[in-house]
Amino acid sequence: MDIRTYETADFEGVKALWAEAFPEDPPWNRAERAIPEKLGFQPGLLFVAVDDGGVIGSVMAGYDGHRGWLYSVAVGREARRGGVGTALVRHAETALLALGCAKVNLQVRATNGAVVGFYERLGYAVEERVSLGKRL
Ligand SMILES: CC(C)(COP(=O)(O)OP(=O)(O)OC[C@H]1O[C@@H](n2cnc3c(N)ncnc32)[C@H](O)[C@@H]1OP(=O)(O)O)[C@@H](O)C(=O)NCCC(=O)NCCS
Image (cartoon, rainbow, N blue to C red; front, side):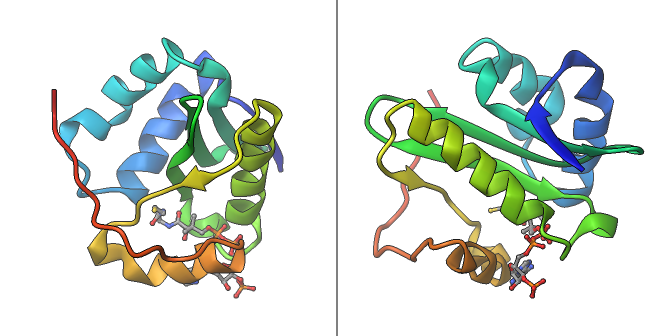
C-alpha cells in the first residue's frame, strides 16, 4: 500500500470509493464535482491510498492560513481495519503541518457517530461546537 498525491488516472477509483463510503452524500460532494474543484485549489492536498488493485483509500485536506480541515476520509470496505485510514489521516496531518497548520478540524455526520472512535484513536477530541454552514 502506498499513499501519494491524487493523479488523473485515479478518478474512477476515487469515484467508486466515495460512492461506496458516502452513499448519502449530496451531489456537490460527489467526485465529478468535488475533485475538479479541489484540483483547482491546493491540489497537492488530495491523497489516495493505492495497492495493486488501485485506489483503496482517500483523504482531502485544506489549509486556509488559520485552520486545516480534513474531508473525504474513506477506505474501501475490503481494506478496512488494516491501518489504511490511520495512515491516510497521518499523511494529511504531516502535509498540513508542513504548511504551518497548527490545528486541524473535521466534521462527522451525526448519523456516523460510530466513526468518532476512529478519530479519537488518532488524538482527535470531540469539541463542544455547533456546526453551521451556508451554501453560497
Ligand atoms: C472510518 C474509516 C476511514 C476507517 O478506516 P480504516 O482503514 O478501517 O481505519 P484503521 O484500520 O486505521 O482503524 C484504526 C482504529 O480506529 C478504530 N476504528 C476504525 N474504524 C472504526 C469504526 N467504524 N468505528 C469505530 N472505531 C473504528 C479502531 O479502533 C481501529 O483499530 P482496530 O482495527 O485495531 O480496532 C473507514 O471505516 C471508512 O472509510 N468508513 C466509511 C467512510 C467514513 O465514514 N469516513 C469518515 C467520514 S467523517
